[in-house]
Length: 126
Image 1 (cartoon, rainbow, N blue to C red):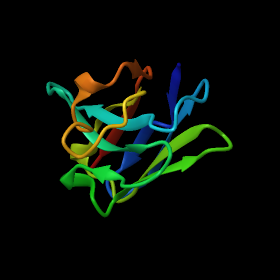
Image 2 (cartoon, rainbow, N blue to C red):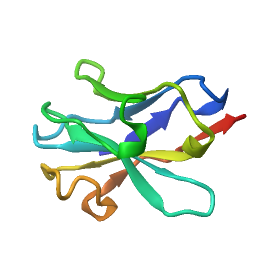
Image 3 (cartoon, helix red, strand yellow):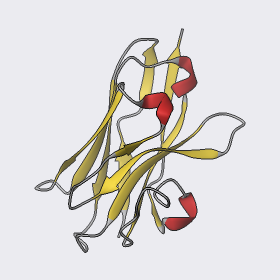
């Protein structure tokens, strides 16, 4: 399974971007898809994730109320709508997938994922 991330760019503080992650093939319904990001000089960290079949969408606390993860099953694509962007949202954003049906205690761990997109740069300027 290949993941293709896109949609990054340069935006001013308070602006919006929508990231896309296209999956190359359909897999089991338990497939988990997530977004991670890596800020300059920091480790990669979880942003948002969910099972492809639906259910709870998990967000890291710093993006709750600003970011929204959604799915388009027909297009085999997930989106990350990012509103009210802040400078601390700057980083390379990666989509990640796994055939495991991850839950609250595991979905934030990047070691659980075995498929990664190439990353897309998001830069928020003040």
